[in-house]
Length: 271
Image 1 (cartoon, helix red, strand yellow):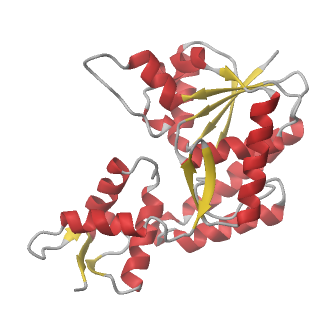
Image 2: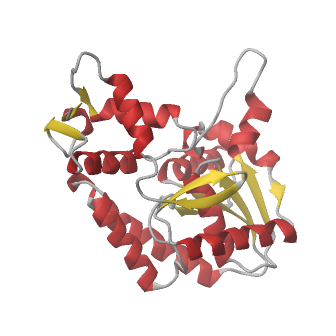
């Protein structure tokens, strides 16, 4: 039975490709590079739905990132072509870490594949702990793309088969997200739930307050780094930067320098 690997994000896709090549495996990879932590959701094989997501990213991305929108569109086309070409003989191995983007990706993929298709899942966050943590060194993996290629592929041994009950739960979670129409997502008690697009703003403000000393300015890159490093679920520097621009527009923060480069944009609080 041919096994197909499904992975989320460009980094994780690249790492898994290297891992498969090193293992001399001929198994194929399907990637979803769109960050489903934010933006509208629906049947991604509909042109209308794809356009809604691309329009969302046009709203969110900075001027220097516009080329990424074309890559997203091409990736969704390839994903839908794969959905159309699926065989009843295929089986899936889905790789996901415990962050809203990859967890929502899992739900999305399951909504597009037949319920009879065998599916297993590698929870990269948990599997990494089981395989690599020691009494002296402890790791917490928030993103599959963080894991080195050889170490990532080795986690395939920790795959767990999704039974009919698990898949029914995932389908209901996906349906709930579609009903809620939220623009951001977080993980709560093993499920994904929608939250308002300003949900993470208080956390971003708190990280920025921690950086401000004697009213000195600080770079966007430092705020983004603090958010990604300390928040248990935030995974996208793009989304944090977008929310910072909204905090500037609302008058909470002011800036000097370039709004197209995180390292060249300096912030301070308006008060």
